[in-house]
Amino acid sequence: AATLEKSKTAKGDTLKHSLPASDRENPYSKLEFEPLPVNSFSLQKTFKGHLMSVSDIAIHPKKPVIATASDDTTWKLWSIPNGDLIMAGEGHKDWVASVSFHPQGTQIATASGDSTVKLWDFQAARCTLTFTEHTQAVWGVAFHDTGDFLASCSLDHSTRLWDIATAKCKATLRGHVDSVNSVCWQPFTNNLCTGSSDKTVSLWDARTGLCAQTFYGHLNSCNSVVFDLKGGFVASCDADGIVKLWDVRMVKEFGSIDVGPHSANKVSLDRSGKVLAVACDDTMIKCFSLKGDSPTELCQLSGHEDSALSVAFDPYGSYA
Image 1 (tube, helix red, strand yellow):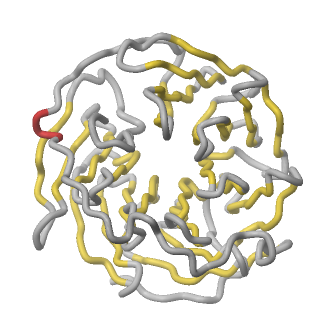
Image 2 (tube, one colour):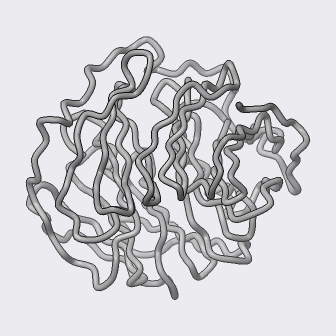
């Protein structure tokens, strides 16, 4: 069962005076979307363009474009469905673990094994900012919905919040006792969620830098966390292939899925919040319906020849 912990604190400046008001309304809170018909999905295109494994994928918020991050130290932009290369970014000195689009789609942020976070501007076609304060490899990066702030998580046990306008680290969230592997924002709030190799999932208030609550239940390293669009629950997955669902308001686990024994590497939710996809070490993308009292498997998407490391749904609900 999940338990509540409020003892973790952050060192550094808080974002209290620069983040937007905490009482903003989520524009999706009253909208309902049809679950994505993943059981009718079929493989449309396979394109190779990296020299090493693809570690992460992100979908442009407004255009039919995807970004990929790779162990070959580069990130690339591709048009879909044809798979034409649009742009490639070189500059990291080690593997690239994560990519995140700016909400306006004008920039991309990357996280790397070289301990840096980089911001790339499409119009300028170059890296415009490099954040170097992490002391070990950076696993994840995520833009705040305003596009003014960026969160990153690292092997150095910390999560950092970056102010893009001032190009400075505004806060360091400390409390995890092992690598922080994944970070995401609760939609249209100032709260973040982190997943760690210490087997916990934590929620943080960026305005105060404090940990609001911690969920316990994973028995192995937590690899990925994601919020539903309405911000009511978190899905997380671990190295044992266990996926857990956490009710943020009730502070409790309300579902568990076993896709093991292979590692579950990434979780993604469609815009309805009713379809969950899990990228697994056994090469499969496993999809589940979250309608009803307990999760039910919908299908398995095959085609990869090695571990599936990332999965994402497009924001308009037509493909993954």
